[in-house]
Image (cartoon, rainbow, N blue to C red):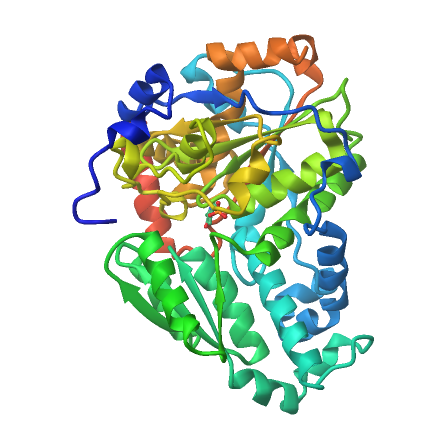
Length: 453
Ligand SMILES: *Cc1c(COP(=O)(O)O)cnc(C)c1O
């Protein structure tokens, strides 16, 4: 973050309703519902030209043999990157001292345990790197379009990839996701990180032979560093977290996976059995891709909400503002300082924000203390360890029933009587690669906040 975040400007502030602006500046946890959300039917009507989920799905399928060969952890699933859907039996009740528990069934989508990368970034990051590897290899005659991608394991392909660098700007997890798959294929990998990125994440990257370049400033500064590095050099490919369609589509594929898991439980979303999905949002790529995929599959039967820290509600600010020019959290006087490092982003993705305008039901904000309490509660109630960013979705179902904006949303959509049949999915986005000592620190902070002895 800049040493002195720019003061809020009058012009920026004037783009938001005064009441909302005051609540955001006061860092009050709130639920904003999106007045521009449209009724989009499931199917082609919900898709945008150029954002083709099926082609991304087919690509991941084509590469599954190679992925299984490169990463033994992926072999049990035949090279697919998938996570479990876990029913939360005790966690909802553990929140009940915060004023009651909503009805319906609660599930956790376990992307915190995605193989290899240990976060949701595996989905977008792997797809982005595989798409690049495929394009490069075909263009240079190392692969036929129809050939099994396993051929990219051969020395000639690896030697070719070794002459290319994949650069990415990251607060940590995207660097791990991209860096590990890039190194696995034989590319050089370089991760541009903000100064406040966690030390252990930098160490873990370096252990795997990935270059770490540190930048003073925030996530946007790290991105700029990576972009600059790639600009003058055709052998460097920059993965642009603020604009990449391949990242976005990799995330979108998760919708089918969730759909299959819900079908197996007899919970296919419908008007009678609505699905609510709550997703932690940083720049917006992962939650945006997943929401895009879910709207395409289930249309009005699915309601997607993003969760952001009170210090960094970048997607909320962008979507709630009048006009579509970029608006950052600094513009309204917030500082983007949060323990939720995966969500510490001041400016929403230029690619994703416009795609969310008609698709997103709303955004809610969460304090860091609430994140730490919920990390602790999830461990005590379900024995699942997440990093603070990854639990941000946990308060979603409560916000829906316990705020005026939430109750209005339910009433407007005729959902008041449907909650008993509702499925709530909290998307858990990271944690499996967090070192034990770091988990212990989060647990101790959460325990103290909960007043444990
Ligand atoms: C990156 C990240 C997110 C948010 O994803 P974006 O694509 O930045 O919106 C959420 N949780 C964790 C743990 C992350 O690393």
